[in-house]
Image (tube, rainbow, N blue to C red; front, side, top):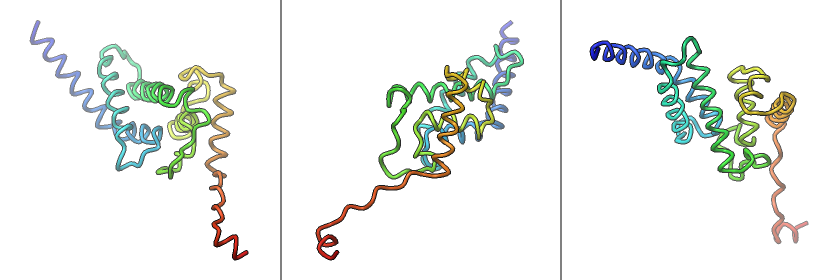
Length: 170
């Protein structure tokens, strides 16, 4: 009996290692896009990925034909949304990066980033994204459109303040 459990555990570990080897890089990239961190300095994304992989491993035997990548991506998205909600309140709606953005996506709110990455990078359908986030499909569509427009036509930086020397010279 013990030998059977040991061999099942070893098989489970090998299957999971193969999954991580194949999908880990893309999942890390997705998490990095969610957090808008630079790819070479992404501690929040790595933490999100670690939590998602731990959750996926914990339910590995219960997947029964489910796609483990889909399960890990869902956990990444919901964990990011949860952390953004607690960090910024209301998923950071209206909160854009205040310091110099390190990523093109940093100009978006966390909710806009989340929906844009799910829809455009991961190819998740609007209906699936809406169900995952608990939002109406129309809202997901509107947020994705707004985020795309923001990336295509980024907000301008404020005009530089006039100093006394510049005012006197005019």
